Image (cartoon, rainbow, N blue to C red):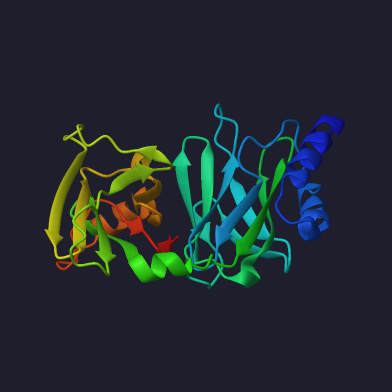
Length: 268
């Protein structure tokens, strides 16, 4: 690792929440061997039971074989597009021409630790990613007493369907306005070619259904519906490689063009 990279690693560690983990994180990131800094996120925080995504970038002008290993036990998790672990939670996908993603479908506390992306190029580049699995936040007592918000998602054909349910203990409460966001940015429902929104209201309950039309990997993100102090979110990850495999089979009870990885996050 160059001195410049070492300084940047130290800066990332200082910004990492929780000083008790700093030495462990530093030891992980020091294992990088590269001529340039890893352009992808090197410290990944994820709440337990949520999916985690570890990114590895390779030079855009060449095809290189990449392999992911887990430092704690030296296990080879993936090589290229092949998975070598028997744990079905781990998969690998190619996000773009030069970005490979190690997917962990449901993170558990024991998954915390250091992971290495090794690139088979002439420099034998190694990038390190530290994964920290956190405890889920507790809902505030006030939110539990007054309102609750839930967000669920599924796949229908080539559409992602998200259902947001806001429930108030006050049955006369008709002033329930829901705001939809993706990665913190408000969704523009004027774009009817991409989004369709339907709303149902009944005695303190509002159910809003958002459809994402012709969903692709470009629609990946953290989707949330919010009302007042209530918020529920889903991390949506669409795996094109899995979808193509599923579509090539002749299963009459499955008909979709993409595969959706989703998990209920929390309400705050």
